Image 1: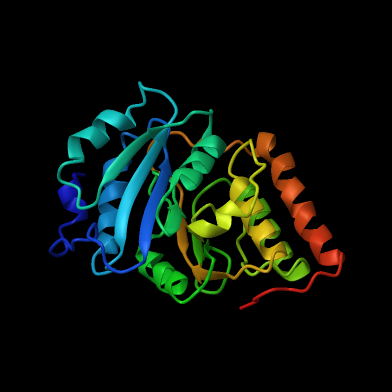
Image 2: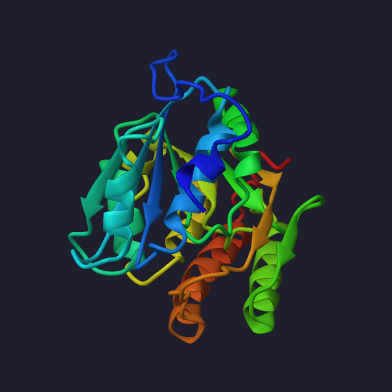
Length: 264
């Protein structure tokens, strides 16, 4: 698939132009995603058409021999928004996400993967939610209208149980706190100290801490598809204790008598 394939459904919209106060940085951590990155970037560009949001893409990589880099270099000149390549000063997906979030100068930051798992058709709706005042907009597989296709059964089961139980027991305003596909108001990251150092649990940390501080959190129904190419970097056994840390944090905050904030 070429970049043009991802843009063939209509004329390009100049999404890179300034258009009011709203700006977006799309952070994509990569690890040898050369087989997926063209389709991912093409789909993102297609779904951004007509949004009138000043956008850039930041691709965060760990090492210079990553096979994503030459593919990105080959398409940067034809891509309708600026693409920034940023080397991870730490190591691994958690540091890559953290670095991309904190280095962003846009008013909003979207975290997504490069493996075509996330539902970019819902990106305009997520931006609409942000524009009317929500601090975090979560892509949700487990609310009404959300779907999940493929993936290991144990991982799916644990993810669903964690998301639904935190929604009902801790009153977290999303059914899918474990999904990394989230849109953040950049300013909230200046008042939420990030402690995560392992993996994708950083997305849970931000949500439960934001909820504890009374920030506005909502969700939109999204689909999720298991990757078709490449190897997943998700390490369930290694990261479960890290997820449990923030699971307990959310429950402790709720049991301490703090009010539920901004439930949908």
